[in-house]
Image (tube, rainbow, N blue to C red; front, side, top):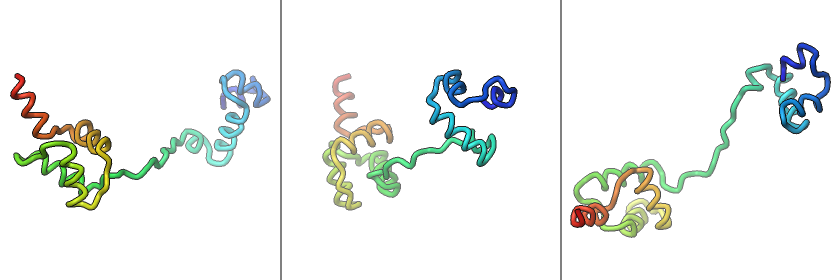
Length: 119
């Protein structure tokens, strides 16, 4: 885009938009960023803040510790109750399931023991 402008091959933002396959409003925004802060501002990638996590770091650390010790939990429902009782967190079953199963990469005792019995 900048090369086409500097070399004089393109003089209008509409033509830039056609060549780049973007709307002219996008080209306008890019050029404004370039004028305000140069190439570094144009190439800057901003990350959206996203939503706050429902389970805080302290609760996650304590949960991992509980899951890694031999004690564990009998079910995901038991984890929901434990989080409410120990950390005052009212979290839905599905949220707990995803955190434990896919983020902590842990399983409840009932899941692990049923696989041992089946195998």
